[in-house]
Length: 265
Image (cartoon, rainbow, N blue to C red; front, side):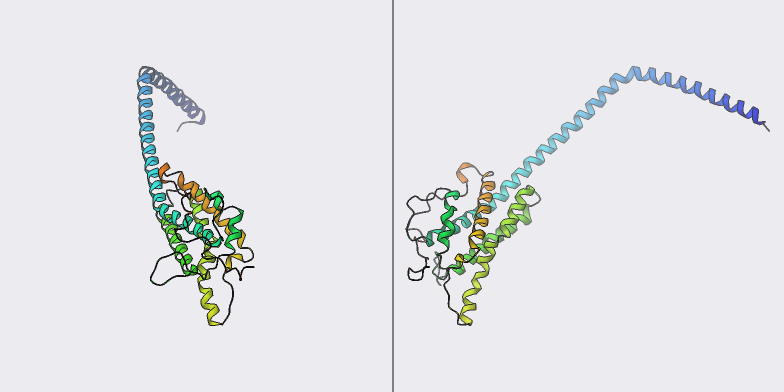
């Protein structure tokens, strides 16, 4: 058996041999690397550039496809948004006693301070601006319009939320949860409730306390949604053009659903 001293020398010898082998090998490797480093570097750079280029092409293609889908989403929302804006305009037109001296030209003009003031005189029990076999009240008309608008918002979110910007999804959800829409839809049950209990009241329900705040919140949301939608539409398909909506030969006529003068407060 090797003594401890001899074992130590054997281990040192093995270490030195390994060190010499490593140095020789390293020198050989360095010489080889020196010969091929330029070629290898060029190849690596070429591969990395190719990978980046392919990734960039794919990214741009995905972005283009996403933008196309977003435009499709707003195109499907366009008609419903136009109809909703028209409904809000009709509510104002049917509430005011006469044509304004200067017709509102933009949504900012329409949804100004006078909007909430005049809607307080809207009698929801009067005939709606809708041609049908059975004449509908504003209660029914607004319920149907709000229901259709909400259904379109829900479909848009279900089909396209993954492609829309987070802020856009949040805006659509805020409009969908609008307290003003909720009020108009639930108010349809009020006449039947009153009839069953023999209760009589005026149906200018938008004059209730706190209603101006609800109306303002909702119209602000609609203005924001219109601005967002118009970013995706060409100039000839912009939403919210109300310049030609004030003719009195187009229903509703001015003041057609305003409270009777004797009932106004």
